[in-house]
Image 1 (cartoon, rainbow, N blue to C red):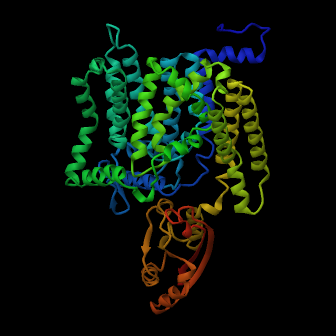
Image 2: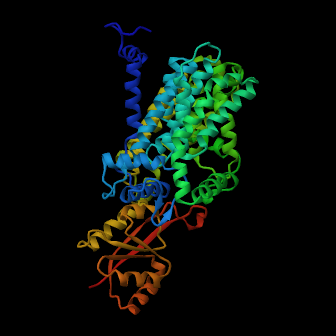
Image 3: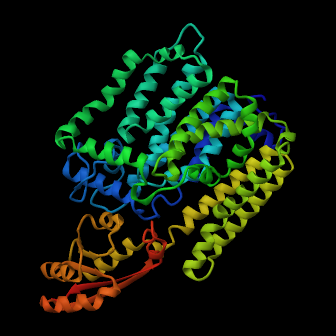
Length: 572
């Protein structure tokens, strides 16, 4: 393909010619990433529970000036290293204000690193399978459901994906040139620096992925001398120089409690058992894969015979070693969450792209059961992505909304088009239709449906009602009984007190007559009123918030459903 199109060339030819250039592809990937990652960043409220915990701990870090120890309210948060909190602190300092209860500045590191992950996928897939496969792999990654979710959450995983990818890019380069006499020193340096950064984000997870890749390659090839090219004699000290100072500092400050909690309970505890009821049997991640990697997951499933046939190829072997050992480990972890396999998906994207470009058309139908199963799963999960959010919105609001319904219909048409093209064996055209379907679905869900789902975002509504009830107070003090979501802590700026019983709530309100607002479930309303009267508090109703607490049924579906909270102030 030439670098520039002739004047008589069609628009499609000119677009293809421009995309073939690195600069043109970079612009396209950036625009695609912005389209899939940015809608909803500043309109979707802080989410429960992890995002709000990270954001609150970051704000407390900025307010206290203590950038070593991590705290959530009055409790030490000895779960992960401080890397993500530092990144969020820097982002809030540049783009926001800790005193303003905005979540979007906390999310900036996530969506930036999601974009970085897309570009690093382009780099590693191009290195392994060539430029065309690299471009497609990056597109698949930019539109993967799980990355679009993590790009909108102020927590670790999008950043961890980018850092792990950085290590894998360096490792792939060293592996592919392992038989060449000369090697640039910066590739091993990049590998160890990335590992050090990963250790500062989520401890040993980055070692699991890169170490699993090395182990897989050693088992597949039965040779490992080339691994000395990683320069471990100076590389390991370089890695430790990045993370060891903070680990020493936190160990001294907490008298070793951080390591007992982070390693003993959080890391190894998640391996041994389901943490916070996030469990599942082996095969959980495989079952979730079709949804998490939509729209390219169908190609990934169809690529399995091609991968097996080409397993001796170094590029395929590297991707298999990248995916399989870590994936098996994640499947046998006691705790399972969909984002755990995110750092492995760039390798899946590379294989899917290479298969799509290299496999002849007949291979789509060479194994009809595989094709039928993959297509059926893809359509079922595709319906969740395309029309699911709009259907849920219609259920919550009692009627469908016009614009979301129209976009859902357009996305559904794209899903059908992609399926028809795939059945006809036109894989690349089906991939284009799938990508467009995903983009429309994400703009609809994140840009329109989720921000308008006020019924499930109780904390901003509670705080707004409390501020309206206490207009003279700079910030009302919330006394909450039963509703204990971290988003309320974030929204209130830690101006909150938990009440165990109606008596506790009445006593707390009596002590904060000027700016206190009590949040009482209806089932405790009568007892709370009696306790308040006994404490000499004259109650003044301040509103009633009704909605759905999407965390109420976690681990116990019987508790899921509608939430109802009555607000009271103390009359002067």
